[in-house]
Amino acid sequence: MKISIASGKGGTGKTLVATSLAVSRALQTGRTITIADCDVEEPNSFLFFPDRVLSGSKQCHVSVPVIDEEKCSHCGKCADFCAYHALAALPQTVLIFPELCHGCGGCSIICPEKAVGEGVRPVGEIFQAVCRGVRIVWGELAVGEARTTPLIKAVKDLAMKECPENDVRGDCDVIVDCPPGTSCSMVESVRDTDFCLLVTEPTPFGLYDLDIALKVLEKMKIPRAVLVNKGGMGDRGVYDYLEKRGIPLLMEIPMDRRIAELYSRGEIFVNSMPQWQARFAGLMDRIEEMVA
Amino acid sequence: MKQMAVVSGKGGTGKTSIVASLAALACGRAVFADCDVDAPDLHLILRPEIREERPFFGIKRAFIDAEKCIQCGSCMEACRFSAIKDFKVDCARCEGCGVCSLVCPADSVSMADSQAGTAYQSETRFGPMVHAELFPGEEASGKLVAMVREMARDLAATRNLDLVIIDGSPGIGCPVIASLTGADLALVVTEPTITAEHDLERILLAAAHFGIKAAVCINKYDLNAEAARQIEDLCADRGIMVAGRLPYHSSVVLAMTEGRTVVEVGGPVAAAISEMWCFLESALN
Image (tube, rainbow over all chains, first blue to last red; front, top):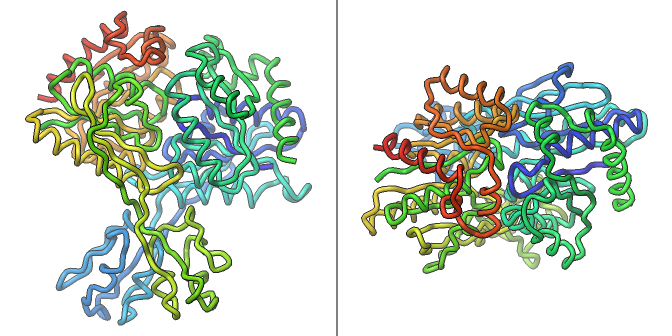
């Protein structure tokens, strides 16, 4: 089963939920659970596993045009075609802005002189580590890079296709920790997951962004439910909204100074508050029922 | 004209509550730009009255004319984004490159603009505001951020205001880069947790990469004294000023639920933000 944990608003507790779910499920089933941290701009999941053992890392590359100056006739067709303004044709040369390139390959197709080839350049790094039944896969976008989706795709590929459980069961449990927001990075992260759990906080900001995130999932036809974190901190708006729309509220984590302190130190709170392990394992069971 | 971008790396550290309070303190002297276009919240506090709306066109999208399509599959083969299935375009995957249209032998693919959001110019009780709404799940948030910033700069010039305060989005990618470029100061809001500290390092690197001067605000600094000290050390090591230290206090959530700024509600956080504002004013000038 592939579950995504998303939110709209940042800082609502996606990583807290993703790590708690993974640890609780691994303890309950004795199987390896994978966390795919798709917040490649600011990956945090791995920080909660300080005694992790790194089992691999690799660069993530995207393609970028390479101009053969010998063949180039400076006709400018490549620059005219490029929808991303990644090429600029000057009378004597063609300038390339690699960070704008989406790697569509159009410049290479349109060039009448066959002067445009393709090279690659790194946009970030992917890591894989294991820690007591949890496998963590995460990506780190190189500072200064704008586009996140190629790296997110690579993280999900590694997490899902090269999953250790695939050998045994033909399916594996992957928990996708999504980036905040509701645009392309979030869309890429939740895509092809069986279920999305939206984490929110009961405040006007939490509610407003939850509403947008729910619209994205509706468009993508991904089954969803909500988890309220920091319950008791704000107002009733989120609860009234969920009730009115019949959106299931699967769990509420109260505003609790102890949980916040454990989190601030990089500790997974269910390890110190074991009564929560059964609740998270139960949450996973409930989601499994909803997916079936 | 000066531009200050409030960013954070990690989400949920308090950017919007702080920007709203800075708006109250800069009342009548600045334009406010909400550049967190895919999760905008500043309007919930500033409660703008919309005066002008402009459509935002993101990327073009491909459309296949089924009448003309000869189902040869050339487009599917050429598309690097797996956006064409069964001779139909999946708009959620299409990145608008136009390769399908280029390779189609039957001239059945056209590229068309599609509205991806709306930008607004508004008035608030503290002064003019520019904000936007990216339609759910759309791309090109960086392009919309650039549009909001341009409208904010134009508005500041017309009204003779010398400051634009930008509410940024979390992260370090496309919309954040669009919020940061050309800013005179980046106010980075963080909190004393190991995750926020990790994210702070990356956003400071990003600011340095684009040559933007940064100052740090430690929100809820009293939640974890040790982590707060580590952040102070990190800033000292890099020669980055700590602009403000805000205590953890219930007035912040109260203000949010009432649609008011922390400064209007009053209390210890309001006092600390006012003090930080004095620092920021001198850092900007």
